[in-house]
Image 1 (spheres, rainbow, N blue to C red):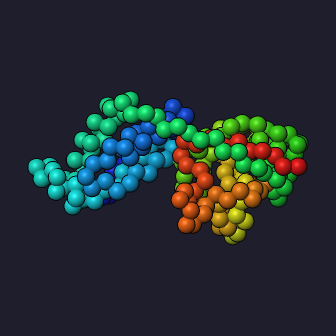
Image 2: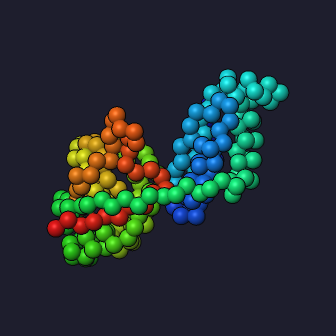
Image 3: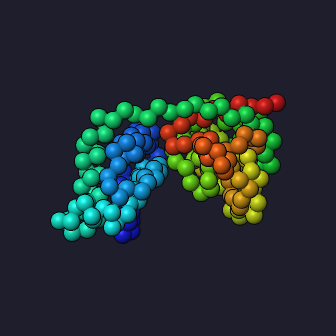
Length: 215
């Protein structure tokens, strides 16, 4: 990816088995870091390892490049991830008031009633496939195709913090006020990002989320 980052890509897919492999590899790397390791960032079907080139080269002077060293490390990690315990996911329940201004559009687009959209959206347990876009923003997979809706053609300049939205076959919550193009169907008062807390984000990759409708 760069002179100080290497990416393993398992394909452009949204697949729970691939995402579980990514999470397991991420867990292995965090528990078995190499000298010079900085951090690992998981995504839907890939993960990127950041490292200090100078520190990596200090321990392996015979290698041509830091990339070669990290590539060898990752190849061995893939062979040995089964030796590491799988990270235990957490189930987080998030209360939602379904009052989003795009809720009628989502219903009309899918030829459903507003009540049906609320019921369908709050029924599944969603997996956090990856974090990104904003601090604390979780991309949630598992949205029922009956309410899948394209994102807005023109994004809003401001989306309020706590807004719950749909974009294609994904759903998610805006942790902070920001621009955004997702279809807004509701909001929550649950804090997803807190500066100064031990855990700055409520959610992490691999967790599960259940939306609880508030009437």
